Every structure is written in structure tokens, then in C-alpha cells.
Length: 101
Length: 350
Image 1 (tube, chains in turn yellow, red):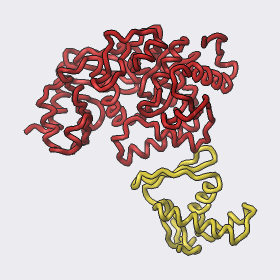
Image 2 (image 1 turned 45 degrees about the horizontal axis):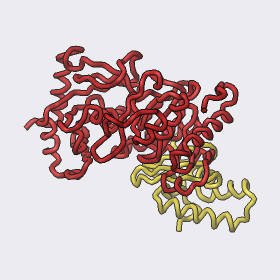
Image 3 (image 1 turned 30 degrees about the vertical axis):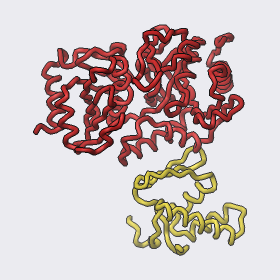
Image 4 (image 1 turned 90 degrees about the vertical axis):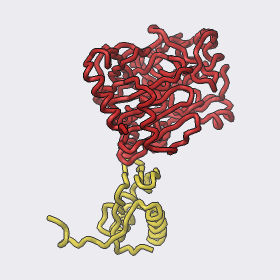
């Protein structure tokens, strides 16, 4: 299980595009196409742009009318599926002082 | 032994040494490309220039022997269709009773050899469809597996795999005065905020019953697509075909025959952008070339097209007697989407 202190990035050779308000993904290595519904798309955007899973969780909790436990469970399940399909990679949080200028 | 690369270069040198003379003295326009050939083809001459070029060069069997020897038994050597990507990136394609083709890695040249028993018409269907699709993909185009007609100055495309009924539906539109834009392979390009659809070869491949019903054409003396099918190759006269690119209005993804058989009535469904995107990906022509750059290009192409053109699902009972009803439903759907700007003429269909 990935820790919420980690940061998620889009795996190399994975493409994401927004069509309408829904996301589509292609893993060039496995040639797997995947569609995300609007909520999945928002989760994807939050997770892959935030500095940590925790930060994405906080943002989504503020945005959606959902209980903390429910959101945590949904996010965990979503992240496991993305990791299983090799669409994202988990890594350490990038500290602000280490970021390139 | 001469390598494939050398042979392709030889072909190039031969044609360039002839310049616009014997090497490629015939010039045609199809799918927005200028096709030059050392052999006459049944295509309109190049009148408008093109967005790309391809040269077709006839070659003796020795040229193809060298290519196939380099890959040994790779690909199914005994089957009706054989396709192998060679080490230099060129593609060898062969249909057992039709002919063989060698498409250069950059898609700018096709060497071909027609087998003795293949008719010229049948051979050209494969040259200007399947074989040319390799050249188009190699040159960065994304062909769709679609047949398109022109209704009131706008192109309407029917997307689907083999045996989905694209050509039959198109024939029913031709009966009502629409023009054929292309059969089976559709090339699109973005132009401003619209999408242009390009004309294909002026022919339609139809079963005799459909040809008789909608085009009034007798099957007698018509050429079959290949020895294993009843499908005929029907030339489409100038008055029934569209010779210039035209703006694409809508794409109708046809339901698979197994789903359509169960459909009791005609149904047109608007697709969500994600559903449309997936239909476009499924409707890509030529699934043999699947390297990463192509997959990435397809992905962008489908996403962009989803933004620009309406994509719908069309389900209908697979019965000849119902095709006019399907045509009417599509026409009504187009009129709803486009409003009076399309100027749908009363009585256009029957």
C-alpha cells in the first residue's frame, strides 16, 4: 500500500488527454487504453499535480461533499488500480528547497 | 545479395532517372495525395495538388523474393494475407491471389507486383486501400475505416470494421442523390475549426443484391473483389461521386453486426466525448503498424477529432429492406444537428 506522504507522477510512456470533461489514458508499453469518468478525471488531475497524495486528498475533501473515511478508501482503491496498470509511479515528495529554480 | 533497402533505392533511382517520364509518368489524386505511377491506375488525374506524395512502382518477383528471404518464415507464409515489417522498416504485404507490395519505411514508395490471375480492378482495390494505408500511416496520416458520402455539401462518414455495412448504407444514400466521397478508407485533415474529408477511389464494393437494389446495377460482367467473396467492385460515375475535399459534418459509428441483429429499430445515440474517442480508436484503419509513435499519434488524433466532429452510434436491423429507413433516420439526425444552415431539401430522400 502506498503511503499518503508519497507523491504520484504519470508513468513514462503514459499519455493523458481530456476529452470533454472526461480523461482518456494510453499506456504505450502495454497498449492499454483507459477512460476515466469526470470524478476519476478530477482525482487523476489532483493526484498527478499535487506534491503528495495527502495534498491531493485535502484538496478533494474540500471540493466534494464526502466523508474523510470514504474519500480515503476511494482514493486508495483508485491509486491501487492506477499502479496495477502501471499508469502512475509513486515516489518521495519533492521538497520545495530541492526544486529546480 | 541485394538488400531490401537497395531495392527500394533502385526503384527510386529508376523513377528519378526517368523524372516525369517513364518512371512515374502517370499522376493521380486520391485521399489528398498525389500518386505517381509507372502503370496506369483507375483514378482521377491529379488536378489540385496534394498534401502528400507517394510513388507506385511495378517490380519483378525477384524484388519481393529478396524481401521475403530476409525474414524467412516470419508472418504466416501460407495464409491468404501476409504482412511483415522488415528490418529496414519497410513493410511487405501480400494477398495470395492478388499480388504483393513493398512499402518503404518513409511511406513514399510502394513497389508492387500483380499476380497473373488477379484482375486489374481487384488488384487496384488492394493497392489503393490496404497497401496504400501503410504508406499513409508511415507518412503520418491516421486513416479511418470508414465510408463517406456527401449530403448537401457536407461529408457524413460511416465508421466500422469489415462487414459492418458501411458500403451498403452508402449505396442507399447514393440512391437518394448523395455523392460518394470514399469507400472503406477515410483521410481527414484539420483546416481551421473544421475537418476536411478527402475523396478516395471512385468505386464502391457491394454485394450484388445491394448493387441491384440501390444503384440499379446488374451483377453481370462485374469484377469480384477476390475469388472468395461475392462482393463486386462497382465503378462510380462522375455524377455520383465527390471529387474535392469537403467538410466533415458527422461520424456515425455502426454497431457490430452481432448487436445490430438484435436491434428491432433504428437508433441514433449521441456519444459522450470519451465514448466517441474510443469509437474513433476502434475505427482506425490498419492495425498492423502499432509502434509507439503511431499509437501516440492515434491517441492525439482521436482526442482532437472528438473535439471537432460529432460522433454518434448508429444501430439498426441488418436487413436490406430497412436501409432506406436508416438513411431517413440519419438525414433527420443531421437536420436536427445542423439546422437550416445545411439546407436540407424536402424530398431529398424519396
